[in-house]
Image (cartoon, rainbow, N blue to C red; front, top):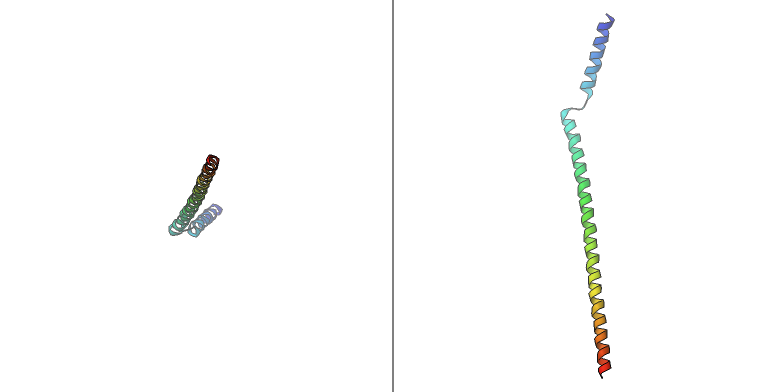
Length: 87
C-alpha cells in the first residue's frame, strides 16, 4: 500500500512540475526577447564602430588639410624670400 501511495505522490508531483512550467508561447516570447536583445547589442556595436570610423576619417581629413595649408604657407614663404633676394 505504501508503494502505491508513493507512486501516486510521485505522479502528482511530476504532474505539478509539468503543469506549472512555461507554455510554448511563453518559451517563444522568451526566445524572441533574447534574439531582440542580441540584435540590439549588435546594432549598438556596429553604430559605435561606424561612429569611431567617421571620427577617424574626420581627423584624417583635418590633418591632410593642415598639411596642405602648411606646405602652401612654406612654399609661399620660400617664394617670397627668393623674390626679395632677386631685387
